[in-house]
Length: 305
Ligand code: PPE
Image (cartoon, rainbow, N blue to C red; front, side):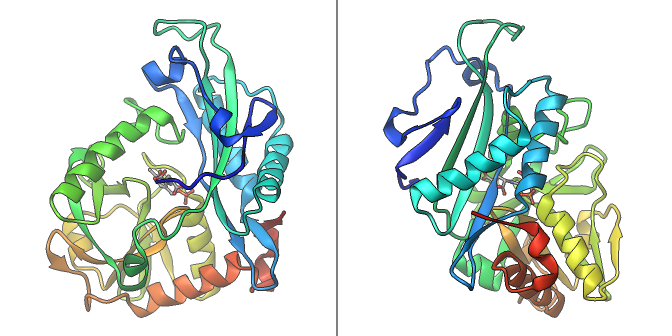
């Protein structure tokens, strides 16, 4: 259960948590047209709180809204400031921020024309997404029986509310079968994404991740590619199949919520040694140093509140 904070920002005002209610005719509730973001703020080594890649996340929120033809009545800078102010007001040193753009009530039917575009930002404290144990020692994943969206079915560059029905189906199936997470294949059978993460493997020292075809352009994914290049690790954005994944030396998932979570087993095949490998460890260390403000080269990725 999400632990209540004091304030939620809704349509221009900070309001008490319990008052952040919507009407049952909220259009997005019926038809799923909405967009959102997930952003983490970390308690830095120097005691300050920094939001990781805030402008990039807010830009993606606006890109998602643009794709779905939803016009926000605020500037990107205003929403960035709302995120910072919400953490200050909620007194959260470390939190997950959830901006949500949705269509309010007034119009029913599939044509959303005339529905008001509403914007909310919520913050809550969220620990390791796939468990502390998973973050440390790796998780077990299962290839899903559900296929990832085709670009002409649901546009995956938009972080759209409705896209996540596909993720929920896959996640629930994997959990019910005793795994920690699902891997979804694209419509051509190549690995695409986790339910809320991008996928990486390491083979013979090379770090590989699927190209930005029909997947969400993950901000953690982009950060990991940059950090790997800095560390002198060769990277490739290439498609790979599930059997190539089984033969990887190392594998991990990335996401704002999942951070860098090692994968130790896929479809009951051990990945590499069955323990997080050396490249995964180096990238995890580099990533956590950056988000906690301990790497001076990446201060430009941090927005202090
Ligand atoms: N793919 C999908 C489908 C996805 O939802 C996410 C984030 C990513 C990739 C990674 O993107 P990025 O966070 O920019 O590195 N998933 C968000 C939602 C998780 C949830 O359960 O809610 C997240 O990690 O915030």
